[in-house]
Each structure stands twice: as structure tokens, then as C-alpha cells.
Length: 101
Image (tube, rainbow, N blue to C red; front, side, top):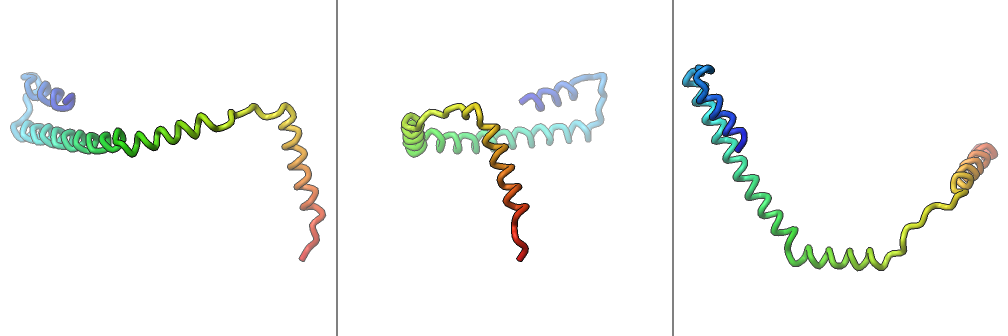
């Protein structure tokens, strides 16, 4: 992994002159990253199998059929803004004439 390579480069650099305890902890950190990466690969492989399975393919085919049979989206009418303004003005005038309880 990139992190492991970076840690190895730092540890091998004689100009750094890191104490043994630091080098030990860097090794443990590299091992930890390797374990986490292996676990992530396993999790990804399990989930990937589910995505590529028979049930997923059936769902994808069903959704494609629904998409193909759906009417195409149309642009809103040119006077949609005027209709929206009239609707909001109508609701404002209705609330102004409301009777108190």
C-alpha cells in the first residue's frame, strides 16, 4: 500500500535517524493498515457479489422495462410562471378573507 511504502521510505532514510521505538510503532501502523485494507477488500467482494447476482439483474431488467414504457418528460408550459404566481396570489387572498373561529 502507499502508506506502507511511505513509512518504509521514512524508516530507511538515514537522515531521519528515528529511535527504535518510533520504528517499531511505524511497523505496527503498517501492519494495522494492511489488516484494514484486507478487511475492506473482503467486504467489497461480498457486496460486489450481491450487486452482480441474479436478483439484482432481474431488478435492473424490471426497472429498464418501466423506464422504457414511461412517458417522456416534457418541458413545462411557457406560462408556468404566470400560473404559479396566480396560484400563490389566490391562496393569499383566500387567507385574507378567512373568518375567525
